[in-house]
Length: 136
Image 1 (cartoon, helix red, strand yellow):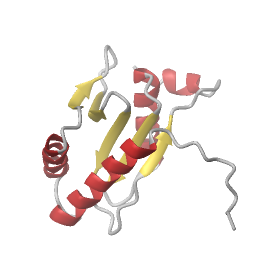
Image 2 (image 1 turned 60 degrees about the vertical axis):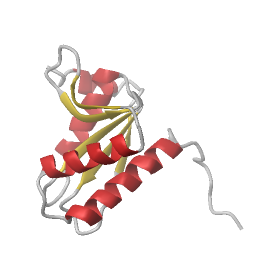
Image 3 (image 1 turned 30 degrees about the horizontal axis):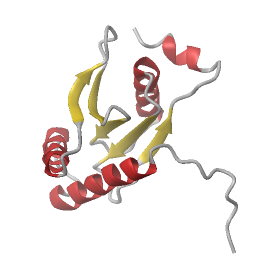
Image 4 (image 1 turned 90 degrees about the vertical axis):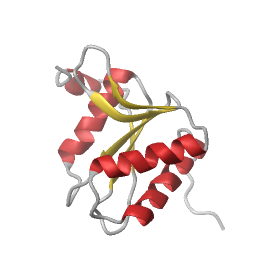
């Protein structure tokens, strides 16, 4: 028996699962009390190990925003090391998605006891103007 499958279309499922797996491995290796740079370095090492194309600390043109990672020109990976992820972190990733025209962002908080990657999809409605106003 199948569960309610109203939303069966995931954006870049294989790529996002690979990235999530790398993040879980990184969390298991470093633990939850590392610094963001340590997690970034470990993720970069693992991306190089599987020959995954990426850009680290990638600036979005003329916005002043810098992505932690842009992976395969398809997914933004934003790393956090804080007690909880809040609304501002979500808005930050949404602004990055709007400015770069990327469809999917992953927000990962490495300080959490259990890693819970958040998939954030770019808003393609009239509500996107709320984020465009915040780009500057």
